[in-house]
Image 1: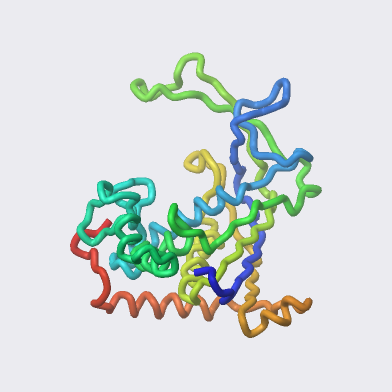
Image 2: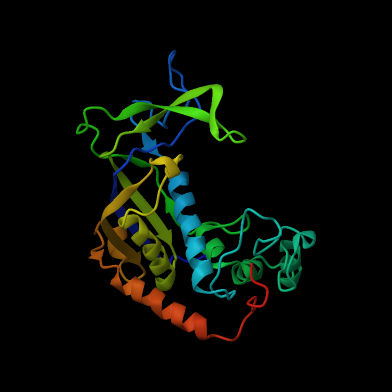
Length: 288
């Protein structure tokens, strides 16, 4: 997947928070700090870790793939369950007859690393091929998101109170009060996503997932069911470097901004094609 440079696409956008944001660091160095502070840089400004963004985007991608098609050519495994992963670590973790473990694929490749990589990609689900797995490197990178309007809000963070709940009584638990820090609504973060050697339809899938974010329906951070974490992705920009303009890019030219329509259409076409296919390894009778 990475032996040859095919393309790199840079996606840039601005995330404007419509509600507060809680991305906790679990540790405060202040003498009277809050129980759950937000992630901050050394200068005290909050940021959103790229891992938090990637987790939210990948989880939504998996849900979308499971709802569109249940064929191996176009699907999502459950990476949190060792028996439901597309490529198990060992033969003992296999749940379905069509699954092949890493050891089996290595033997099938006759210990040839290039052939082994091809087999891993073939047997991995769509999300693992795009976002990575223990055996495959991710082809999508999410940078940490930093504040773009730190001078605009009168204050950037605030402290909110919370109480523990007794699940048996369904009421507040005695002597379990805490507070947590949030980033105030109206703050803007710069989002940057890099993709490497994605096919047009794979990039279209990613852009389709980001559509939820543009509509304000992809929450980030913690406590999202009680309000924080909701924002909208705005001003999404797309630039592509491929073999046709690689030399110009390396010598100083900037790639032109592209429209997302080409990739979204490629994704639509691929969905129609995958839905009608009858070849390949089929797990429709026993889907993950």
